Length: 142
Ligand code: HEM
Image (tube, rainbow, N blue to C red; front, side):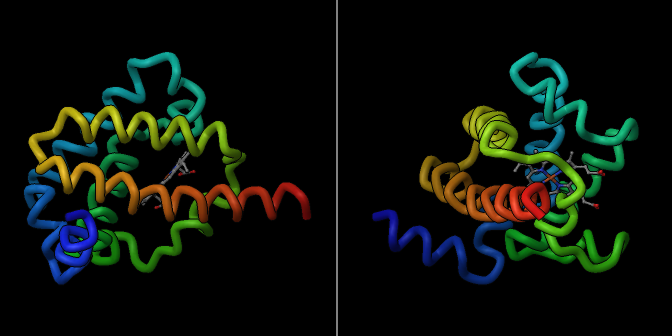
């Protein structure tokens, strides 16, 4: 059942392992950025990233490592991070949020993850994605 699986994935490094460790996360992030760069539906969010997309890939990869319960690779290299604050200079509305989540959903679907983990991962990613949207909306209105 989902509830059992969700408790299990949130426990320790279970999610990190289910994603295939650092190699699996690297594959996911590379495929995510490849898709974002090639699909015109994601041109807006792709263009929002700085020119150095290798660093963007490295940052997301390292962040997801720790976020999924694995080693805290982002902090090791780049220091502390607050995800909504790291996006607050951007214009992220429901449109950009949904583009990011769709691009991620399509990428996750192609990975060799367990079906339950695919579902779990998307549900979890929607949480920071919406926190980002709310932070950006607050900045726009202030
Ligand atoms: C809501 C949709 C999202 C959009 C449109 C988006 C877009 C972006 C963009 C354009 C950047 C580059 C910012 C810059 O360097 O100026 C970025 C950075 C980053 N994003 Fe997102 N993002 C989204 C959601 C997420 C989520 C859900 C996560 C994590 C689960 C995430 C993790 C990161 C990380 C770790 C960085 C690097 C931050 C830094 O080191 O400054 N993003 N994102």
